[in-house]
Length: 601
Ligand SMILES: Cc1cc2nc3c(=O)[nH]c(=O)nc-3n(C[C@H](O)[C@H](O)[C@H](O)COP(=O)(O)OP(=O)(O)OC[C@H]3O[C@@H](n4cnc5c(N)ncnc54)[C@H](O)[C@@H]3O)c2cc1C
Image 1 (cartoon, rainbow, N blue to C red):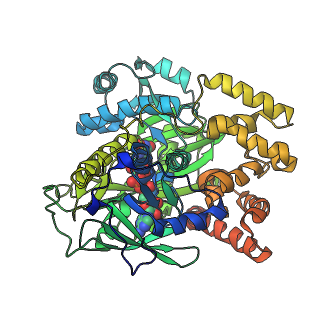
Image 2: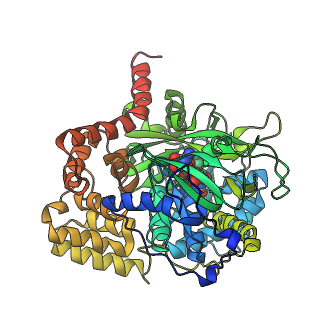
Image 3: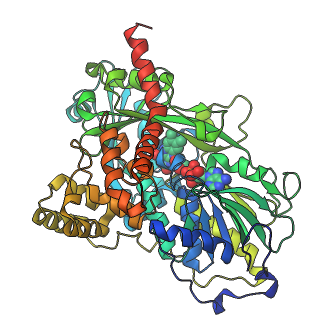
């Protein structure tokens, strides 16, 4: 079997191996020490499918493929969910605003997926009541909104959480008393859902591991040799050790979102061009668009629920969303982005735009840069090209799967909401490609039925009650217990097991947030976190939920996970610095805006 980038092992496809004869593979350990074993097994196994990219798309493809019985690997260059999938508006939504562009298929499909996710990830995805206020000087009038709302209900086959309701001005103000009253013409109330996007990715990653896939983070694909199918070889570099291995797979799924073109440029199979693989008419082109969000304290805005509204400056549709018990998430901007994807960052202009829009809706808030707790930016991997002169918001969110060269499938576009469906469509394509080589699935796709890890329970309230009772017996606060239920579902018990064994892990990571130190240890042992940055920003999210507590949180987390990861004192210091550097990129924009405001610029 192949052991290094130079050597090629015997190919399974040529022999017409049938998966029906294959035995399920043992699950490789997800603990940090188990990572070396996982990285090694990348080189020692002939995979059916190698997935590149550990955002929601790649995670979902790996889960789907492994559940069908394909021998599946996934490599992620940084951390799982490091890319766009931890930088979204965190909505599982039909996408009301896509109705304006008549993307009815997209809304229909997303509405179905919203229902599926509410079922298979009940603890993570929660129904969210929205209000859409309309104003005399707005683009959208009452009649248009009502028609859109009916269509939205219809596209979910009238099976959304509740049907919409039109409200007059008085009713709207009764629900959101802080709203600008001037010119208000009432609006609508309807339902969508909210999710912690990074936790959805991590939970899907864990599901893929438990289905038998081999997943490695901090492992970057640097080259793909796709010149002589059957079989491709990807050269994968371990960012932790610098080691490189060759990974053999019959098919490759490029699920790298905004990086998709960069990956295709690393394929050695002749120049990239529209391919004969599936008759697709155009090469993949991604036109990334930057979207920025900010957190502020909920009391500073003065809203009570979720709002969707038109930004006063340009009429773009935006969100003000409740986050946790006490925070608000405001987003988003939409600007074409030209630079390298990993350099995307919030700009002072983005933050100013979000603050201005919020002040327009809630004038009494007088929200300013000093209110911003944190900011972050992500790239929408939109499928190009738009028609000449098309605006960012008008480029399709629809997803596409291109095959070129044969056996290399690139997934582009799409949404967090529709990830499961996108993955199913992608694996269907790969399955058809593999069938003539005798590689067939063991099982039918079932990802819409099987609950994600932690979601195998009947009644969320009953689960919450049990976790609260157990946490109370351990001396923990209700806020921490509820957070555990939301983030981990039934697996909150595993976090509580850690507290039971080591009571000091029941302490908060930072005084103002309910996150527990035990979660940090859990994320290293069970969720493949390798760095303090991974823990603070993508496993627990606490790093963005405090204005000044991140340094303390980083130090305390480094201290409790150091024995798990064999860190020296110097390494702990480095880890803290690295986590703070991650935040500093966007904090710089907040500071610059505050300085400009002070100088009256
Ligand atoms: C501002 C904003 C708001 C959004 N809001 C919503 C929303 O509310 N609801 C919704 O449904 N959708 C939303 N979306 C869309 C949604 O977030 C994206 O469609 C989705 O997250 C894309 O996931 P992905 O896995 O394709 O890409 P990513 O999450 O970017 O993952 C790609 C991964 O590939 C990795 N990678 C890159 N190069 C390599 C390499 N050489 N080797 C290995 N790995 C590599 C990257 O590190 C990255 O982690 C939003 C998008 C943005 C930008």
